[in-house]
Length: 445
Ligand code: NAP
Image 1: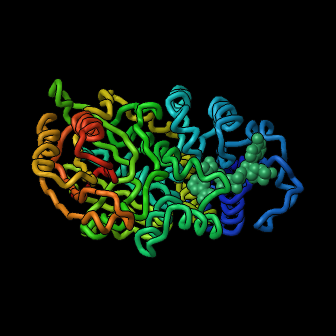
Image 2: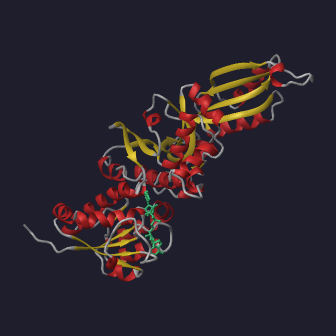
């Protein structure tokens, strides 16, 4: 058997994930060496503060603040610092000095992935990033390798554990958004500034990465449509539940036909949507993640598990490391990012979806017909209309003359987002509508 020399592994970052990667590398060095066919020697861990207290007991002499020297002496660089800079510069330095790279940095890949993949391609370096989407769950390699011979039509992903935890608490306990967020913060699922999670920014970064992989097309972060969960109310969750749905924040990547031109395009978007309780994604509770893939030949596949956590994410990082180290020892170049399809990215207005709209309207003759006309004006057909009357005396204790109001819950058939949005805009100015209580999209039905 050929004996290969040890591969020198540099770790950039020794935080939640980095410290676990270092521990596993040291503890399982023999086993990993057998799997790779060469030893993996951890040559150092670059951090900001070498004296900071660590959650894992690691040899003090491994820590350094000199990331650049560490990179220059490495065969493989694992970037687990997070953020854009200096992570971007360090990864480029690693690639240009002949190292292969593993990263878990979704923010960096979503913003600068094209630049990094191009740099890696130019020198034949490998750049692996399984942990950048859905933590421990294998989804990047299944899309890149296992499904490389298939045609992915759609991905529905629960890729942000914090928002899934919050929406799950609202669904199961009837909590308000504020109460569920407070619990998430208390349990360490939400950061002190939760904007990246509840604003849908983190999920949008993952949607950009997944859509690029699934459709062999560069999908920049700016082209991902994004809505967070900040406007979701306990009432919306309760009425979705009553109707047999659960509300989930979804990252949706879809191959579709542009209704205007008949040509193929792709869409990547993030928003909260009603999912039928019978859909596999409805069973994803707590802070777990899941990615539901619809492929032409394979059919429906679901990948489920821990979307975050230091040791869980370290598993995906080590998988990337073993995979590229095997290739490194036999000397093959990395796979270039496959972006040959170059499909156009459709605007949110062009995608087809369904809405459930809840309205309060004055209870007068012809009100329902007037509402139906607004939908008809925009060629949106109705699938379901439910009406309940709120008698006038139930609304106020005063003696003012108050009309009864009716609550209408309207479910639409599929229509373009532009037509549905225009319908809602017109409903807002219609004189029989007193309030638009809720507008939610329906997915996975
Ligand atoms: P973290 O706990 O904040 O750790 C970051 C580490 O990087 C720290 O050790 C820090 O040094 C070091 N660092 C930061 N800036 C540096 C700089 N300029 N120079 C040198 N070292 C620097 O982060 P994490 O949670 O482990 O996340 C790491 C990456 O994994 C991120 O890209 C994140 O998005 C991704 N990820 C994390 C999870 C998760 O569950 N945590 C899941 C999936 C993906 P000090 O220790 O000295 O401060």
